Amino acid sequence: MAQTPVCLYSAEQIAARVAELGGEIRRRFGDTRLTLLGILKGSAIFTADLARHVGEPAELSFVNARSYGRGTVSSGHVRLGQLEEEVLKDRTVVVADTILDTGRTLATVVDRVHEVGAYDVFTCVLLDKTARREIDLAPDLVGFAVPDKFLVGYGLDHAGRYRALPYIGCLGEDGQ
Ligand code: IMP
Ligand code: MG
Image 1: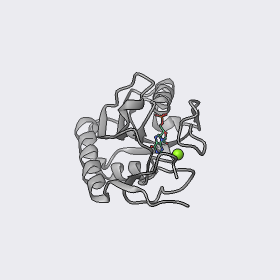
Image 2: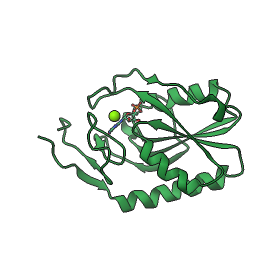
Image 3: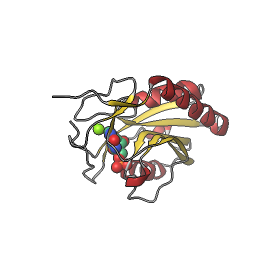
């Protein structure tokens, strides 16, 4: 039976940190041709909240990525959907991801964004699971450094569940 995740970051804590991250992006990149690129599905909610703190005239784009299947351990192989090249080419692109784990997903997206001709590429992650990094990748902006636990809520799922939780919580060892 599904358990109630234990709260790690409340909706209020998340909102405060996302506001700071959005403000920082606005300060650093607000005078460039900026596109925020969210990684679906897990970063839909984070990217939408972030975008409203970055404000106009940033453009918004999304790309689909899959690496987990239905488990709690990355399959190691990242499959990316189509990139919206016309809003990435010659732009400053900030790639937003809710959680950075091994680093494979973000590294794959960053490489592809360079390939389609972005002017410059930066990364913003809300949660950084530093202990599990397999790719040498340091995000430009980090919301919270988090322990090596499987987290759900605020867009993050386990087998499709919990994305709509307003807080970020952790599940037990077996993901149940
Ligand atoms: P990476 O490619 O191993 O860095 O994994 C990044 C992606 O895996 C994220 O965009 C999430 O979709 C997913 N992921 C990693 N850790 C978690 C977690 O603790 N909970 C839910 N999804 C996660
Ligand atoms: Mg997932």
